[in-house]
Length: 158
Image (cartoon, rainbow, N blue to C red; front, top):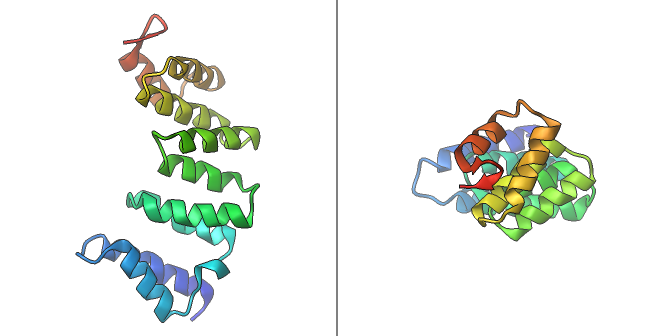
């Protein structure tokens, strides 16, 4: 079985596991053992792809695990920081990862929006600053405009 076929098998079985009582991590470990795949041998790029699938099914624990390993393998992989920031939304770690993405000039507008959400959850006035920066970069950013209408009036959090 080729490497790509193994990854596809893992992806399909991961999705199936969401519909069963078996935990996602148990399924992944079982598949990895049967296919003789060691997570340490998987490239940073493939780990990011596995993490994206995990994020889509709200398995943030697995996503963070994959992305942290991807970052360890390639500390300048902005996509890994971006995806991990999403998985960590609402935490200081998410803020740190979004800021790292901005430094790496990756999806800057979306990163400012992610910072908006993080600070909004903390009820911190920095949310408005990051929201304005998001809209400065992309005045038609749909989610940012909704947040502005719902949470901010006259530049103040409601």
